Image (cartoon, rainbow, N blue to C red):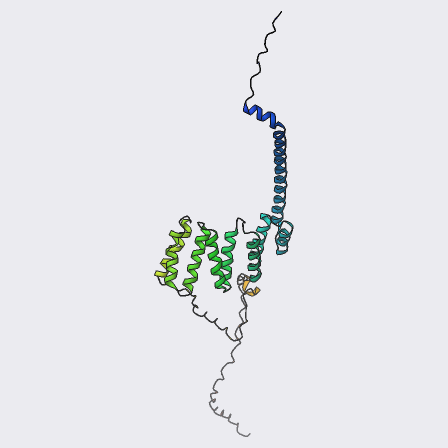
Length: 288
């Protein structure tokens, strides 16, 4: 009776990782497929976004008028180019003396594009424009907002400078000095060019420079023209005309000498002639 060998345990036990893979292989494959789809979708979205940004940037670069900038804002809303268009529109309106509209455009930019790269500069510019329009309270609030939202930047330091300027122009010299003196401590990361402006203002205050413009001396009155002289204006062709060159004098032909008229002889004084003696008569012959 033959004996059969007992089966040996030739298979090793599976490791925990192998057991996990056997049990979750299907789930892992599905997760990998989903991740691949996300990568594809992200790439396509990014490509389309770059294409839209390029189109918006081209539209902004071609814009020249207020109407052009309005088209960029309406057709490419939410893009950086649309925000740039609002800033350019505000500046164009200000230069065209439409100052209230310019301020409203800046306020629209800050509402719709608060995370724009130029948000700090826009709010700083808004404060300066409000100040020039005499809206001091609103200007002060704008400068304070720059300091609160953009601490550590040059814009925040400039906003504090402008707050000091408002105090100085209001006659609050000591408060203005305190504002300028605290500039380096409160804005240590600001550029030296900005910090130097605070130091310059302190020197101006020490020099007692005037804060208001003084009218200069009146312009001298123009000299009155002599009676009968022509009245010429700036730009007159008579003023711009080049005077003709003087002509060389042509010597006159010598005139023929005219002989003097003969003078009439002076009348001679008549000398009375001597009386003639009578001639003696001849003697007569006798007998005659």
